[in-house]
Image (tube, rainbow, N blue to C red; front, side, top):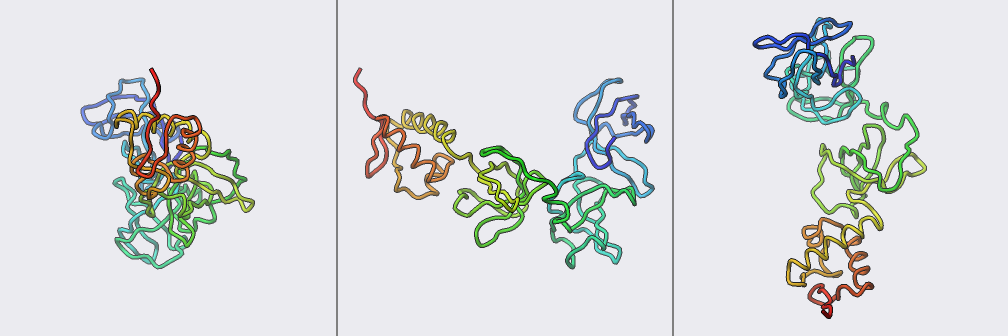
Length: 279
């Protein structure tokens, strides 16, 4: 069983209000039936989050925190003291951020980027603001267009700094953004390239011919549903293109260029048209 993470535990007993689980070396654990969406039977497994209370006892809950051990997220400060801060963790227990792990003066009701981990010394799940200590610890191994999980950290002059797969620093350039992006946002991204410094260039859409193929089908379908005409072309505003097709202007121009060369559409001053075929 891993403290600070989701665990699948066997149901030993079910009472009117509780589900009793096999916690292995931690003994029997109980979780409120109201916290479990499924209706398990004795002998089946249920997935619960495990943490420790102030007495270092393992506790099971059906609620999932904002971030588990090994993950980063922005969390709001509920309380500040000389010993540290208590953060809103998304479950009944606040997450402790020791003062030794702080890198800035904290204020109540403000959110801060933290890394969550299980501290072997205190046997508690705690937070730290020293996020750089937990990033780039291995060599990133990604292929172009590989899907990744992205946490937006902050805006810079060239784009948005992001954390990739809870393991690496990355960046999404302003020129690659065609939707609302803000710090704390979690989304899917696609690897453009891994730089020599180990940082990763990320796009919010896939790159290359795979995009063209899918966009070709989408544009042809939209044209057929709009009497063979759409009032958008390679001169249209990038936001209009994104709102219409959910893609960048660069991908759109490449796609309609492909369709034009295949003599499937014409590109006119007022938009794009399906080429009429002889029956």
